[in-house]
Image (cartoon, rainbow, N blue to C red; front, side, top):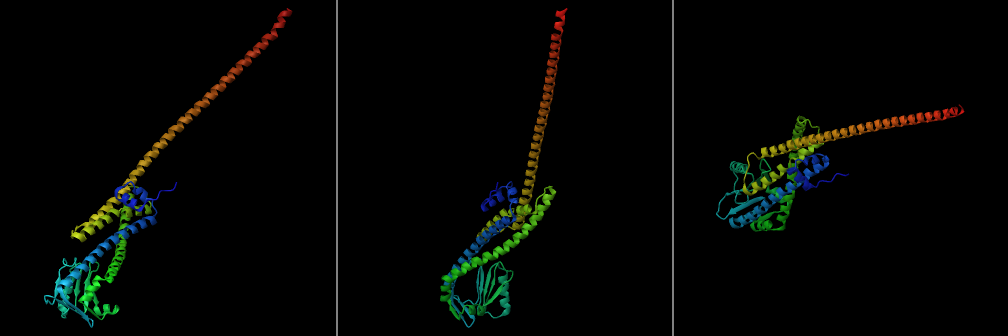
Length: 349
């Protein structure tokens, strides 16, 4: 009888709620387990990317609003940018709460390298920051450890742009190009997140497989490497989902859990250990049931043997009775014949 296929969402349910079901998951082919974790990480990556995409959308809208209300003039010409604030400030420092968790510093008249370095250090301290200068833009995001510089000359040459002003920037931020940029941003980020998370998860699976191997040895349970690998992979289901929920809450509210990574590792470890011990318990239970069956079979064999012996003894007894009866009849017949043979002699006398 062919084993029934377990669906993707049923595997998620078993991985989280049913330790007994880990025995079935452990018996899966490694290729199916790898496909499961890949699909889970793809879903995970796209959800996170859409979250960032939504924040990017909000950032664009807030940026348009800020430019329209606070910037009097934007002028780009001869590879140099000039931004004028309506309050005639030389340097604009926009707080991270104003434009969707991104700190922006704008000073297009700044040429002193020491002051530029001070502003770069301010950007470094932020998860997401942008420093807009006369000849270049410096960007720091939460995925990079240090800011990255982009010179306007390189950017605008690539897109064949020689001049730009405030109206044109607002038009670009409202047009189809920005929609395409958002789509490309989401896809690119999803790919990046997938590579980062799948690499990290494969390392986690290896570590939890080693843990599972040690637990199985201590429990004196012989499990194939593939079975322990499968258990380790499925044990990460709940931690990954909790990680996703935590990420969403963190992005929306800023709420942080200091030791979340420890909790992530602890939950996965508990699942690995519990699943292996449950399999051990099931093996013991099945062994007990098997022993009971063997005992019953032994009793049945002994009963059949006893009945067979009784049957043989009865047959032997019947055979002896028949022989005895036969011998008796034979003896009676001889006596009868002898009696008949003596009768004529008496008559002659």
